[in-house]
Image (cartoon, rainbow, N blue to C red; front, top):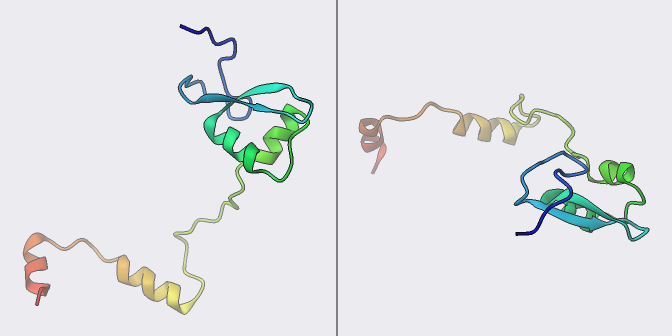
Length: 98
């Protein structure tokens, strides 16, 4: 069994050793990260030069907007209302079949 000297992802702090990997900074230094952050670093436009830069390159890019909020256009409103209905009971489903 191999001993792991590092116990967590340098970016998010994940401690699940099954998901830990390493990525290489621009200077050749290896850094322990989880698989998600390793992939994000590989896909980034440039190699990070430090752990701090690695964190900023791989941070969550979502804008925080709740997609369940009110639809922005007519088509979105139609689709939202079509799929927002309550669940049909089994007996109701039979009535709607043709």
